Image (cartoon, rainbow, N blue to C red; front, side):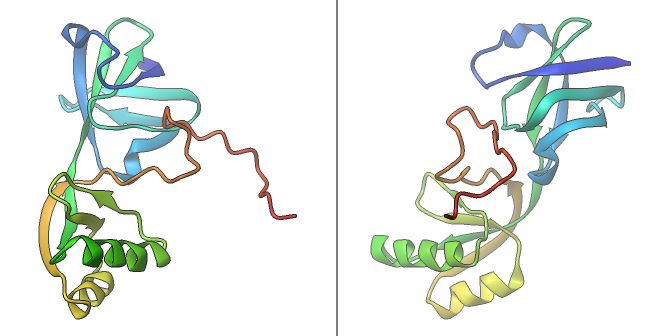
Amino acid sequence: MRRATTTCPAGTWPEAEAVATVTLDFEDRYRRRIRLTDDDGRPFLLDLEEATRLAEGDALAVVEGGFIRVCAAAEPVDDVRCRNLSDTARMAWHIGNRHVPVQVLDDGALRIRHDHVIADMARQLGAEVEHKNAPFTPEPGAYAPANGHDHSHGHDHDH
């Protein structure tokens, strides 16, 4: 079975050497070791040293040669649009206060995984909510390393 042991961020690997693609939703793009099937139905083993957040356009280097391109799957999401910048900032605070992952879109909308409770809250606060199927790539968080790898070490820092 093919084995992928290294990740390569989007833009850093030779795309001409892609031997396959794998399309995964947000939850499935955070893995360490799992048997996966590429988009052509061929199995491979993802075998990383540590759990890693994979993003659209990243690649998995295959030990046997070549790269498997990672694609973000369309999944149920809600795009939340507010009237102005201050309403958007307020909405981001409310969403973040509920510890809901959020993606900030180029047009200023906030994308969340579909959640009827949060969507209802957003509407009550005056936002327009559009339900759709689209890729979801939320912000990694303030304490996530720039390379997207999680180096947590099993304890918190409350003293």
